Image 1: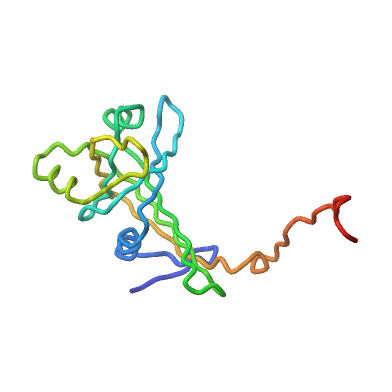
Image 2: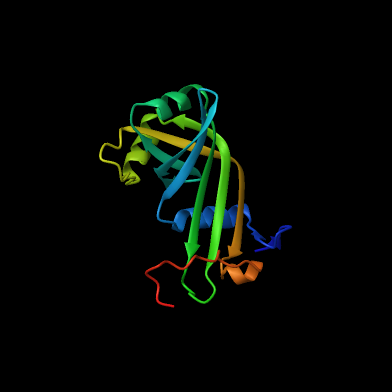
Length: 162
């Protein structure tokens, strides 16, 4: 796998690595879309369905918007703390189009995916986000000292022992 650092030292991930990370995550991402001329970001559970992101939605503004303006962004972030001394984080951003699954065979695959949103009433519309542009970064989150930053000083309270 060929990787390279970006201008800030983050590892730029290949499309293949981005896809692998999306397949191993806990399945919560953020859907970015434009509603009534304003940007909106909605947290949603997802699974990979082949090369696509699969979402499950109920009736409402998000689904109505996707039916009319299907160009979206979808982002997933995760912090891997397997090594507590040097945790790493990654972020994957997908830009593409969203479409309601209508084909009976595709719908059968979507239902069989087991996608179960955490909300009480997840809805029955399955939506796929087709990945047109995929980008990702991996970076160390080893602490504030790495960036020569210090936490803000706090004022001593009258209850503090001096």
